[in-house]
Amino acid sequence: MNQSEKMILLEGAHEWKRKKLLQYVALTVSIVCFLMTFITPTRIVMVGSLVGDYSVYALTAVGVVLSSYSLRKAKRKHVPTLSLVFSLSLPIYIVLTMVLLFTGIIDVAP
Image (cartoon, rainbow, N blue to C red; front, side):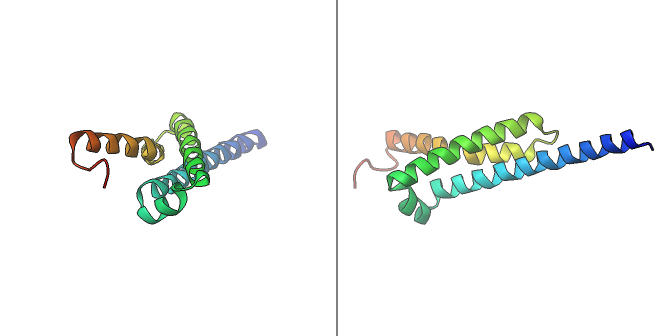
């Protein structure tokens, strides 16, 4: 194996590691977004304030962008799909709340 073939193999390995790192960063961001949306203690502390709202919006946007980019670049699409679903937890929560309000399952006011 000559030097140019070794360099091509090293560049391919580096590219693969970068794609995997991107997928797991997207998954981490989306899990944090999911926790801040659905888990009650983090929702009360963070989402009740203006800083919490903007942080959830920013995490949703960053998670969707990273997930969709890694979804395009990946051969195995399990991790990017999971991170995309977790990143979209805020819109899913809003739609779920609206459906439950309009069907009368939850009350509008206490």
